[in-house]
Amino acid sequence: MSTAATPFSLDLTSASEHARLHRNRQLVRTWLYVVVLFLVAIFVVGGGTRLTGSGLSITEWKPIHGVIPPIGVAEWGEEFAKYREIPQYQEINRGMSLDEFKGIFWWEWAHRLLARSVGLVMAVPLIFFWATGRLEPRLKPRLLGILALGGVQGAVGWWMVASGLSELTSVSQYRLATHLTLACIIFVATIVTARSLAPHSAPAANRDVQRFAGWMVVAVLAQVYLGALVAGLHAGLSYNTWPLMDGSIVPQGLFVMEPGIVNLFENPKTVQFVHRLGAYTVLVLAIIHAFQTARLAPGSTHARRAILLVILLLGQAALGITALLLVVPFSWAILHHAGAILVLGFTAAHWRGTKGAMPLPTASAVRH
Image 1 (cartoon, rainbow, N blue to C red):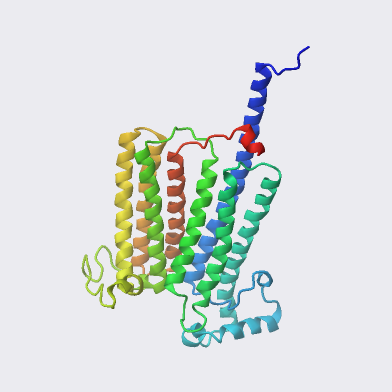
Image 2 (image 1 turned 120 degrees about the vertical axis):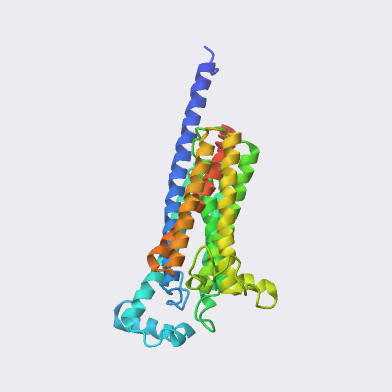
């Protein structure tokens, strides 16, 4: 009797292989969404750390030992003594009590602990999935790249903190913006990778729609960068009117510093004004994208998500305006910060969704 495989047995083998690939994708996708949740937590706690002025409360970088907070009066006293040596304490917080110091210390400690934790949440399952053959070849360099960027982000975070330990009373707005933008790039890369592994009910959108959706991600990232400059300069604490700013649509004194370009990064009035312009620009682009998608893919999931993006941006604008008018109270400011992450994540997922499902690899590709 011939032992050659019949067409029916080949179909069964193919179906079994496809089922296995789908299961692996679901496992990897679930893991990446857990990573996304950790990243969101880091963003929110990081925003709280900035808003409470807590980022310089820990003056040393101890990647391993720093997991353990001070224990006992003596250790708390040592930690507080280190903080009292930096300009922020001497010029702003002089006379702060130990209990008040603990209040800012825990924000920064929690932020660093979450950052360390997400490294483990990323690295350990990556090793497991790789070793057990659950990763498709095309995923491996992407996931290694995300892990590597996470390591770089840790170094950038300390580089940012170091800028406020010797001369400044807070961290450099340049370094803060770099730190936040790199975190957002990691966030986008993780969401896009996870989204690529999901089953898609709709086919890929028109190439023009895909490109515009990709530029929307860039536009939102740029707006987040501008928001970080506003936070770094405390620029939201001045000119707390809207829609006018300092009594005008275009206020005076936007380019009083020399050379002129530094106003875009160091003049609080200019930075806030540019951030406002950025918000208007992103919203207009989203509206254009919604009309474009409705015309090229009417009634599709892509069109509905493009409309939802406009709604999210309107909500985010409302949060920003409210925070500004109320002179940036913690509750509204942290909502605005969290809203930015929600908008960015949705924009990234929408962009990947317009590209359709990622094709399954061949069985030979997976084995190799």
